[in-house]
Image (cartoon, one colour):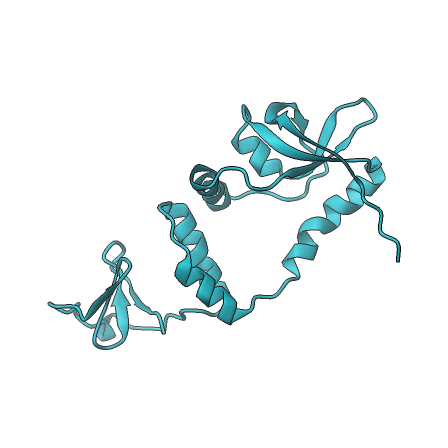
Amino acid sequence: MKIRDRIIEFRRVPAGELQPNPRNWRTHPKAQQEALRGVLAEIGYAGAVLAFKTPEGGLMLIDGHLRAETTPEALIPTLVTDLTPEEANLLLASYDPLAAMAEADKGKLDALLKDVQTGSESLQEMLAELAKESGLYATPEITEDEIPEPPVDPVTKAGDLWVMPTGLTQCPKCKKIHNLK
């Protein structure tokens, strides 16, 4: 199979000059917006948005709408393609779903999440949700009667969580009981 390279140029483009694709079918909930702000604040741009040249000579987004919306005054790394509008539609329809088909290797994800640190509450929430959705750190169903009292002298401290002798942990911020095993 011969594969064509459709990237014709890399440039830094003012986000406000990138045209949002009117056929973009992805929406961005508040939690995603806040998590992206957290990544941009802590890391900055580490990837390019994807665009194609319109017949009028502008650049229309295929991927990266939220990044462009979040930082409208910034110069954004942009990969410019030679795709036709029809090809751009195909990519717009398939780009995210193809990525979503990937499966999580629980062992690698667990090891990665144990090494990741962030000061962003939104990113912490997103990563906790990722772990939960991947089946890591399952929280057992605990009734109010079963919640143990926090120990006076916790055995160990793991991040912000106090690890109790029962193996459960209690978050000092949300006071929820978690089982991190």
